[in-house]
Amino acid sequence: SSLPLQGLGISHAQYFAQKKKITLKYPNAKPMIQVQGRNDQPIYLPAEVVCANELDPQIRAKLPLVASYTPRIRHEAIEEMRRYLLPGAQKSQGGGLLPALGIGLLDERVVVNVTKLPLPVIVAAGVRIPEGQGGNWAPLTAKANYNANPNKVVQMNVVVVYHKSIKSSYQSVYKRVADMIRHHNATYQFGSKPFGVVEAGDMNQHWGAIERYFGGTKLPDNVFVLDLARPPRGQSNDPAYGAVKCFLAKGGFLSQFVNFQTHDHGRSRDARDEKKSTTILSGVARQILSKCGVRVWWVTIPKEVPLPAVFVG
Image (tube, rainbow, N blue to C red; front, side, top):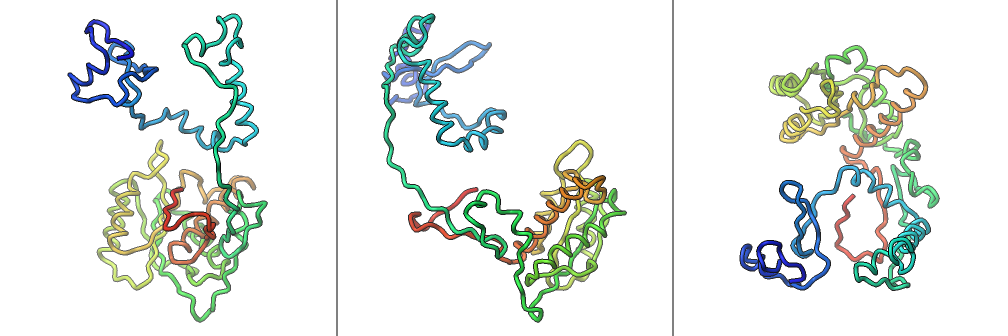
């Protein structure tokens, strides 16, 4: 009832009750929310019926940056906004924006009690991460040594699937990944040569080649599929990824994709390229170990966190 509907002679509360069969819980709430309607005409909605489930892509891309602001920067930004909203702050605008709308702004902050959790112990790939490096611990994991008993090492039977465009380099890339895994001295290892090799193409030539291989080959235990994929031109991700993953998962096969569109690991033009390739493949090696069952990283949950709990990253 705080804003009449033009041309209908009724309030928004009455409109929702009569047309939508919705009784507003706050029929006199202010202010209303303006949204874009048909023919770019503004329409006004009570706040309680508005649900926003999608952010603008540009805003969504900036969320990590917003979340990383320090308390001091946040405080200064809030103070800057308050400076423009306080009564009398904008002399040329008639004494401030909020007073013109009939809204007052208290010159104080709301005090909220918080619990500051201690930094948990972070152990990544067997290496305890110092507190000062808690925000960037991945590089330290390359030094991890699990010291597995040689008599208990499990040799994985690796099937390498490679895109036909990287036929000349798939063997060297496999060897690098196998060497990185071997460097960790974990329970699971890749052999010096793969058990099997599958040449694939795009789309149905990708999953079709895999289906034919697994349908006509007698396989041993402990099979791991390493898929060196190159998405079709102009695409960042392989459209066949979902179909291949689904097929392998149904068959009970562990698998790991390496996207050659992100970086061509067979053609490092300079030291910078080589370093980027090593960083990516090192992460691939740890991911493979994790999928096989190695505890690559874990944290101690602070006692202040009530259990059971679900953590979403």
